[in-house]
Image: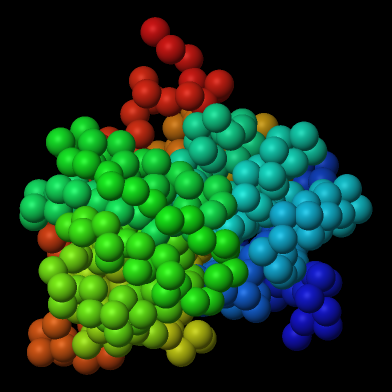
Length: 408
């Protein structure tokens, strides 16, 4: 339904879907509409981790809420940022200044998420990040108008790094995507490895759009490190794992560590290639009855199972709309305050909470990819290795460099 890559797709989900939501004061909603924008990668290397899945998840939340809040329609607009920060900023600025968008969701690609979060602060709107992972979003790059919801590089490093160190992976070499997310993931994992007595033997940084990882993988292989940490995401990560298998890297005794792995990556790799990968995640569709029920509904639309970005986009959008309802307004400050004071209890998280640095704190999970012989069918990919309580999974406030956090 897109007419151009830079154009926004507007979909109004309005009348006829009310679930008896209470009527509101006429002046509670600016411009008489609550407008949510999904700014994401619709066609590039991260589109399988965001794209149509994130749009579908947000649309489901709007529909489930009833299509209206405080008696006013909820409108969804969508744009492809093409993984270009300048394109993303131009779209976000237009959305805020001209189209009266109240909240921007997803924001995969950490460089883009960091810039749009600052823009949301400047325009007094809201940004909720589910696609991107850089822990800078709740560190030096935190704002009073942004929320980092599903996961971050600190939690990924804490889970996967600690698990592999415990298993004897005491020396590391990083293959790192050369942008904000990759840098943060390498830094956070390095800190975990060194804190547990391990060593880092080196790193190779590749341009974000690199399709051939051969030279970088050969450097990692030559390092003789016990663990090769893949600090990247998207199709580049999938290609790197496949190439590593072709080079015989795992067969030579080196362990591949997927520091950000989406279930769609495992689908693309296949269990024969992906088996044994250890990963940390915020969500797995087959975790319990609630996750299975919501995931079935999502899969009916997308023809695939959801990942933590999809589930986070839905959960955070519902939380946002409930906060507007409770606050009686879509004013950013009032809504952010209500979101922070209200616990999150749904299929995505239990007793989740949003801290003053914008971090949504919840449990994280360490999984191992099953062997083909262990899988009972399509999308049955993970077995649980550990649960990391939310207070341990994310960087503590006392160690935060977010300027919003009061110390002492």
